[in-house]
Image (cartoon, rainbow, N blue to C red; front, side, top):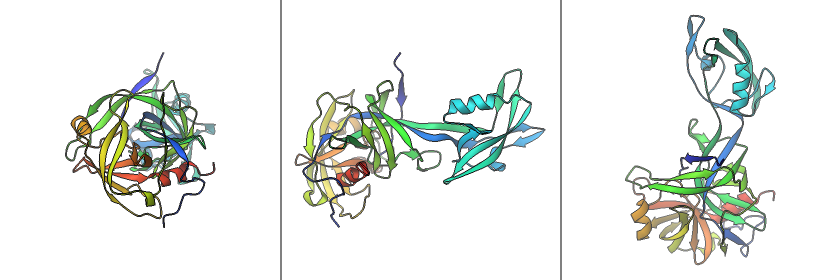
Length: 335
């Protein structure tokens, strides 16, 4: 049985990077992808108070912090939410004291956790809100056949509970089909709605960085991928360009934009390219840049030059992009 999930979308010195060369060609992305990234354990995303021994107990008042990663329960390793639930379910006294192994800011510590068990309902309360993964929809930027690597999204995967870059160590990329569009409005982000085909992994995530997600791919999520060279900052110019993205199903389409400003950069930044959407077809369907377009490749003069990263929410026809050379440098580190 196919497992599909309607997912939310993720929001959006000129030196050649080490290990890549201007003559290299890349497979152009633009395909919508489902992203599922796992924590190295189970993350505590919040806490709640409950009655225990006649008073309120809240784990945050007893040494537990939001953002802690649970790695063990009484020395039994924990890798996923199912592991944690199974272990906590084993403690069926009216009141239980448990030792959690925690990763916090790079250090391994132990903290106590108290739970209560309802024998009639066969349920327990721990005071913890938890999650073990983040999922969403974005856009593939490129596949690099020389290194079997990929770059996507153009910006980091954020942890919405912690309001910071997610501390994830692995994950997978899957095909996604766009099912509908919510158009952008002034100060209200639009978004793609899509289903993720979890039964068909196409790539492994190796790193989550401020300029995108990277890893190795096992197959290209397109029937007829197009190969293009890429350009350095010095080869780019203001004026006409195109973005490649999916607005319906799996069909990648090119849409016209106008590059209005290029920022000279000596280190990676997600706002190197400024542009406006000029394509009437794209504007009629989305009213500008929407969530889920992050990572859509930008092409100028038949060269891949970057990827969409952000939208100006006050005026969604305006957007930003990251330079492709920074993405390639990150993708091919240690390759």
